[in-house]
Length: 87
Image (cartoon, rainbow, N blue to C red; front, side, top):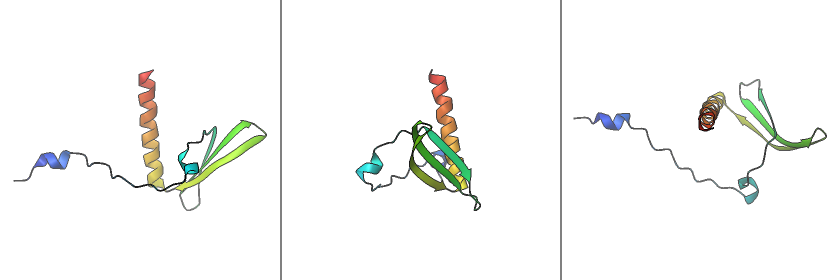
């Protein structure tokens, strides 16, 4: 007999071993983000830090596919909703 409880349980998230440098591990504060859609339908995220309109430092430019963009949107929406309910 098949155990239906096993089918309904969420799978544990896969643990990834991440290799990095100290510079990449330290979070950077982002004050500006630009999001655009490329011709190939990937999403480009440009993150920067500025202390005024004359001084802007690029933090990183990252390209993600639409499926990852949808996941990012879902997670951000959930986090924002939860943070509004905490206040």
